[in-house]
Image 1: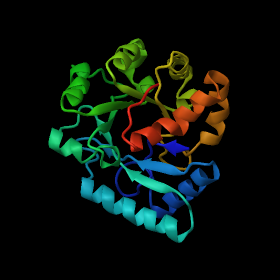
Image 2 (image 1 turned 120 degrees about the vertical axis):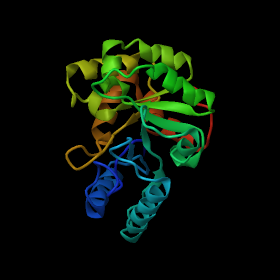
Image 3 (image 1 turned 90 degrees about the horizontal axis):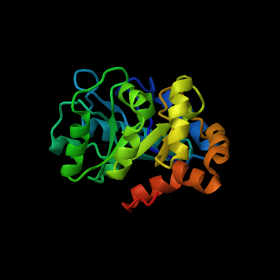
Length: 238
């Protein structure tokens, strides 16, 4: 299994507080059968602004520790870019998943209704990026208008929902939106959005629920196969 959205790198955002916390989280990820973890720290202007160089440095340090402790997990670099972050297209290139220059994980504000957010997302597409919208089921703009996900799907935008949304961690309304999106075939990835031990990896639990909701083959796609295609820069046919 592959988790494409985590805040596992210490010293960069509100994720793992130190390297020992990160190691403990990843040890649990391995126990659950996760083999690859994308490290996607927040990029939020004025709040969290780690450079691409700093992300690489922290990822390499953590990967070295994993190898030393014989925890067989591969870390992949990336970032979760706030849709309103003040970064240029050239800078965005440095924050694409796996340095692909193609896939970019985007975050909508949770409580605000950003102006022209459709235009901002589509602008990434005009620059040659494929947006993956992170946990839209938690964003106020989507809670108010869940059908927006269908529109995005038609436009080639990919959707990642949180495992914890499915499990009810954010409330019934968010869970209902997440489950409907799954049943409607709108979701490309399910990820943990792991931050710490309280908000840790939970693929072992969510896998069972997903299999009941959408079946085992689709669950395999959501928890790994689609991410593997991403790593291989294949087109997602979902």
